[in-house]
Image (cartoon, rainbow, N blue to C red):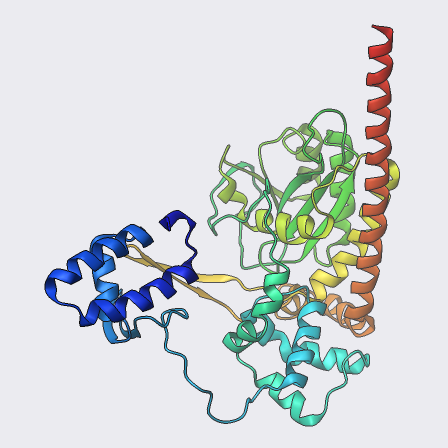
Length: 424
């Protein structure tokens, strides 16, 4: 039997049988048995002898931490033990937890635990979640680690493996100002980062839609809008519409070095509105780290990587974004980095409590009370489940239109190729 054809389970069975003979054999016979074992399994000789010597024994191993393992029972290198006592979080709690997790867009355990009390009260108010007293108390007490453990199997179903042109960056901020009227103050609402997300579908030829995304650094409030292409005209129109949707006055804009942003129209607009306008350094993604995170979390997760180019597709994009702005800004908790320290090669990070952009606005002292009252009234009327259902229906409609258009386009290209071959 060759080692290449053996699976890990087969190697373990072989190890168990040979280990029993090896431990009883004389010194001379042990050498012969070891030779055969190495040939069968393909293990290193030193490792193979260690396996055969210690099979069925408890061994102390040091790999950063000292721990005792039982050689031969490989289940994450831990000895399995029988559970004592009843489970605290029963099936009712798990079902309720999964429902809340799906409604909020599948956040991590830390963000979900911090926002659990608020979202449970909202869902109960709209009668989207009905819980008995015991299940409710358990759901509100559940820890972030337990949330991740209970949702481990669900998360595996939703693992996404794909390539993105816009990945989250490290939390750094270095800007080269073009012209400023005031210094950047990231502790105040109103200082925005902006960027374009292309919807080329992997084919950069021709004209295709772009998503202009803008995010406030302090509150995390994000606005997105679909534009026809990357030209200064359409980007500037989309920018003005997005700025009008923000619930607070804009004090600063930061962009990359693309000509769609660095132009006379936008510079003149910022001068007239007394907005601080800055740009990032060339080829430094981390300078725009806040918006780079949103490009994946808000845009790519929602509308994917298809090619959008027709007016109907852009119309559907903007209908999706109209629902998404309410869903993400009012019901998506976010965490912000507040401290980062390095000790040798180890980097320690501290984050604040997870809050939605809406909650951060309510805590912001430089925003008018009238604005906060208007947002409170809007929040009271919103139902996250209804918003999510509308969002899913619009996503399905958009993907149906896109795939249909691409199917006909492929058929047309095939016909044109056949015609050319016939003419030749």
